[in-house]
Every structure is written in C-alpha cells, then in structure tokens.
Amino acid sequence: MVVISKNYDITVELVELQRKANHFRKERDKYNRLVKEWANKRDKLNTKVGELLNKAQEEKKKRDKLNKKVKKLKKEKQEIKNAYKKQQNIINEIKAEMDGVPPNELKKTMKIRNQIKDLEWKYQTNVINSEQEKSIVDKIYRLEEEIKDKKHILQQLNSLETKINEIKEIQKELKSKQKEIIATADKSQVYHNNMVRIYDEIDHKVRPAADRAHQKFLEMKKIADQFHNDLIMIIPRIKNLRKKLLYTRKDVNKLSNVVESRVEKAMEKMKQGKRLTLDEFQLLVKSGLI
Image 1 (cartoon, rainbow, N blue to C red):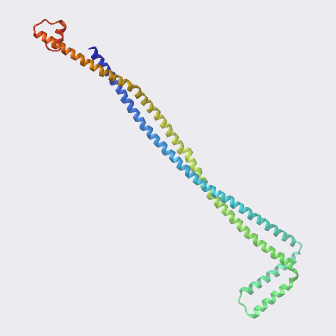
Image 2: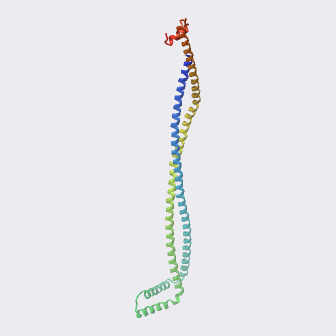
Image 3: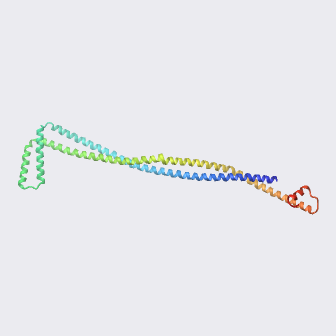
C-alpha cells in the first residue's frame, strides 16, 4: 500500500509539472511568434529608412549640382558687372571730354549728324530716281561740310553712342543672367526642400517607429526567454519523476506477484483442509475468494 501511495503522489506531482511545462511551452511559443512579428516590422522599417536615405542623398546630389551651377552663374554675373562698370567708366570719360564743348555747338553737331544719318538711310532703303539721288547726295555733302571741322566731336558722339548701345546689351545680358540664377536657385530649393522633408520623415516618423518596434522585439524576447528558462528548469524534474514512476510501477508489479502467490498458497492450504492463519484468511477475504 505504501508503494501504491508513493506511486500516486509521484503521478500527481508529474501531472502538475507537465501542466506547467505545457503552459510555459505555449507561452514561450506565443511570445516567440510576437518576437518574429516585431522583428519583421523593425526590419521593414529599417529597410524603409535605408530607402529614404538613398532618396535624400539623390535629392542632395541634385541640389548640390544646381548650387554649383548657381555659384558658376554668379561668377559669370560678376564678370558681366565688371564689364558693365568698365563700359560705364568709358562713357563717363567720353562725357567728361565733351563737357568742354559748348552746348549749342554740341546740339547743332548732333542735329546735323542725325540729318546725315536719316538721309543715308533714305538713300539706302528707298526706291529713288537719279534726280532724287543727286538731291540727297548734295544735301549730305553740304551737311558734312558744315561739320567737317567738328570731327573730334563727331568721334566722341559716335563712341558715346557705341558704348551706350554696348552697355544696353550688357544690361540685357546681366538681367538674363540674374533670371537664370533665380530659376536655378529655385530648382535647387525644391530639391533641398525634398531632402529636408525626407530627413524629417526619417527622423520623426520611420526611425522612431523602427526603434519602437525594436524595443517591442526586446520586450517580447525577454518574456519568451523567461518562459523558455522556466521550461528548461522543470524538464529535469519531469524526467526524474518519470524514472521514479517507472521504478514504483515495477515495485507494484512485484508486490502484485507476491500477493498473488500468497493467495494461491492460502487457497491450496484451505483446499487441503489445513488451518489458515489470520493474515491468510484476511487475504482471501480481500481477494473475494471467501
């Protein structure tokens, strides 16, 4: 009876430990699945961070390329401004030289020069007969005679006019260059804004989400590891109890064989009409043979 009771106690303890082991295994597997899920989320987010970083670098390269172009354009603009200043200085020098010419004389000379130009234009562009041609040529000759002693003034006027026309072209070029600089800088700003937006998305959205996913991964792994350790701790006890149970079952079988042998002997003794001991009598009663 002691052996049977011991066997029962071992069985109860073994069942309880197996129940705990099943619980630990189930919880460990559940949290391991969560570990895998959070690891996948983290890895996907980290991959997205990498992709966004590549995009940001592409935007930066485009921006830097345009910024380099802006720098080159500004240098060209400065060269144009220098040319403008140089032309302006020449114009100022010519005007300074012409300051000594009496205004009336200058005005008269300019008027005659313009008349000559108008006649030359008419001569070159209009269809005229020989008489009209002679008339125009005579007028040009007379006008040139009037200002033949004003060649120096004419040269200054022509130079001034040439330089003014040149500086106007320089102004156009300067204006065009400034427009190109602004347009290029605006494009550069677009790429810069894209880069800033991407970095902002990385720093304030994707990377924090990846960090949170990694934190969850660590939390789930810690819990899964704890359940795994709990399982590992009781497995040796379960194995030990199973061995004990195996041994006690062998003892029960041995005891059963002994009892069976004693019952057979008691029955044989009773059949022979021999007197039974109290233990033998009680054994036959318990066995249901009396």
